[in-house]
Amino acid sequence: MKIKRTISAFLAAAMLLGGCSGNTDETATTTTAPDTKTASAPSEPSAPQADGVNIYIEGDKFMLGGKEVWLTGMNAPWQSWNDFGGRYNPDYWQQVFAMMHEDGFNSCRIWINCSSECAVQVNESGHVSGATDKHWEDLDSLFSLAAENEIYVMATLTSFDNFKDTYRNYENWRAMIKSTENIDSFVENYVIPFCKRYDDNDYVWSIDLMNEPDWVFENAECGQISWDCIGDYLARACAAIHENTDDMLVTIGFGIIKYNSEKYEGNYGSDEFLRSRYDNENAYVDFWSTHYYDWQATWFNCPFLTTAEEFGIEMAKPRVVGECSHEGIKALRNIKAIEECYEWAYNNGWNGVFVWTDRDLITGDGVPQYECAQKAGQKMKEILG
Image (spheres, helix red, strand yellow):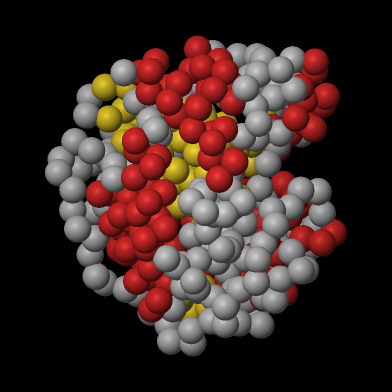
């Protein structure tokens, strides 16, 4: 099942560069102690699906079975934080996926690592040796349940939380991203094993390399690490994913359009930037995924009040709003419920939206969040048929 992937025709001539020197916050709950048994190169294959169920790209559209598909998505990033390798509950995820499918959602963004304290094994020097057996076993179960319920998963590998000084291993992760040798160990011992393990599961349709790298660059609590260092990781991981999968797509979950558009501070996911950090034609993202919350509107406008192009997204690739509030928008004296935001995005140049929820959606604090998000899924189910 080879992807019909369209990329820019040019290849940046930048030379390979070496290593570099060196607001918002999602609430986390306590984590479990890590399992010290590692599995750096798991080999158990995923159960393959029937042909024709992989999402691929033609031009600036997502495609499925020869037809354009619009991603009616949502974020269900965790149940209890660092679930996979920690307190994973398959019954919960089965209920969530079934509920989403019934309500019209076809895709879901999940943080398979939150602050990475119980799964990925990174030492004090920043070297990554692999991940725990339990991490892989939990993901096997998660992705199998997603496939059974026909929910396409965007798997988020890292977050600004990895580098945030409120979490136990933050110094280890900062050491990782400041060294290209350490980055290579993460890519070789985690990213590539992930790709090889799940390439045959078409419902693992994409990888989000980092949740909101903006704060790693901007915020002192996350290290204020340079874009060059962040780019070293992003570029190497992009290349590895493209070189080790047939049809898995890759993106970066930028927190604000500010760093994902030439209209503002520059696009740090662009082909040109990534290839300036790693001279490899496979160092590129397949689609854009920028986040939006109302506080951003004063400086950068709102994707639910402008077309995607006017908002600042480069239009040659597909683009999604990777996070937004379940309450919709109240920006710039405009009010839209979340279901109206989805309909606006559908009509104005976006290829999908992923509303944010961040609590237990079945019995916990996330129930009211889902009750709002549900209206968006049902609205798009009505529109799309």
